[in-house]
Length: 351
Image (cartoon, rainbow, N blue to C red):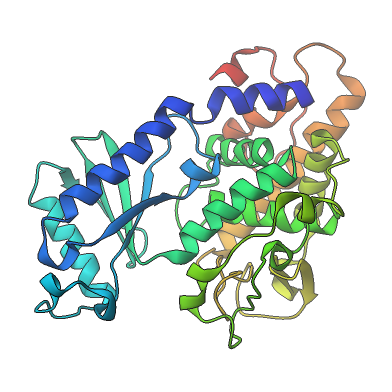
């Protein structure tokens, strides 16, 4: 299973050439936006799955954050430009891109804070946000966690692929790949494989405190890697982590617990959500706030089926086709039915 997970990671993750193209595309968008007077000093950064190393081949979009300097930092050439809000800036960004051959069509957006469009020129779907410091910080944090724990990035990519082929990440009402990654971080923290996220910061940051206002995100610096990793080691195999992940969340009482990855704890507390995972950078914000009861039930049923496939099938199946392939046929299985046998054809992992 270890070898299969590594092979899957190499097969379905975004190749380096595509990663380089994503960074090139971000600078291309930056040059296009700077033709607008409000965006003359805009800086565009690539964030999300691409820079963090968790993007999937053929299904990765391009997440871009547009940063516009505050009016106090604007150069004299722009002194006559009236400051605008983030909401107005998003409209300006969308309008500017749609006036060029850049955008092919208007696509439905997932969240009002993000402009979503398809680029004919780049042949990429674009998700563009304004002043999204939290998104850029999380991308850097995911990359750092991959350095701290050798299995972290392959496990994130596998869970994203697992969710994709099992039709779990099919909309904002279900569990997204980012939310799955947060659940994985929390589980690794419970296994003492990863530290609380607050221990990664060299500068003190607490959401909601005097040192945790949103503007302070740009001042956050991470501790040197050896300082962080001396007390945390990835000694558990990926197979054991997967088994415990599926078992843990298949039985977890989400309705009466709050998951806090910033402090590395799970708190027994009732709430009004179906899943509650605290945003590590924003006070009183649940990153799973839109997950519905159907999404929660589907996640837990798939976790139970996957744990069954990894453990029970191992006892009775002894051939070369056994392994993580047993998780992929759940796409064609009713989520309330057990998996009785693994895939006979090895093409499952290749597809």
